[in-house]
Length: 409
Image (tube, rainbow, N blue to C red):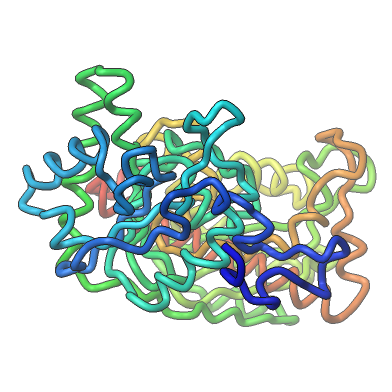
């Protein structure tokens, strides 16, 4: 294998140990019959399948999906009119066989997946520009999301079934079970879910990719502009000094109100009630339906710190998400924004400041540090505005899915 890698692949001035995310630093190629296995398939319908790792048969033949799992995937695709090797392109999250010290197949490590993403996966996606990427199993999921999803990624059970309009890759991202998982358990329910997920994905073959317009966040100092809000529904959001408003020193730092899918007003909360009155008027306006993600948060903070009640609560995006899908870990706003709109991260720069200093739910966070600078204050207001806009967009989509007729939620 001498000369298989260039010097650029094996050295890096940015890593103290001199390693890079490369085939050389991963090292799986050393024991592979088919190192850096090439993509296989004619890609006629623009589907890219990303599996987990080649098995022994694939390694020997130099092609993906050659074993029992591949036959199951091929049969299931054929059931819905798709030829695995004519209509799709096939790769793996790891494109060299991974074996243990006894020569048996093993699951790849996240570091090995990181290496293969850097060297192979990202380049293939950029070159072929697929319409649909099917992620088969947890390693494939990590390959596409692991370097971009800043929260707890979780496993394939959390993500399967969603068809995500990923705004970075500009294609539909579709996580499903790996066929070996379906074979292993031999349960009719798992097979049915898997087939339904695959069938649902194929409905997006001819659907245009959803590109979402950039939200407009209007940062205002004079809250009297809020008196002009005439929307039937509006989403609002607070950024506060903690999770609960009861302890001494807690306050609402800023707020935002989204009046449409693309426009939100963001503002610092004034210290005196007279200056806050336009916000109070909005909250008490019974003609405007109020939207939030987890309404008990905004409702409690409004009662305790603004000394008023929110009138005409219309929609809770978190509760609606739970009604639509009761799996754990899927109802939070950031998760819902990604799976519905493909926007994977707009919060990681701000979120460290929103965590309590000592881990106590009633303690202060660090948000007051953030607003000491003009730049920090603007970032917080923009983040708050994005929250309310995405709450609004999500509520409108959920209402449509659930055929909401306007009755109180």
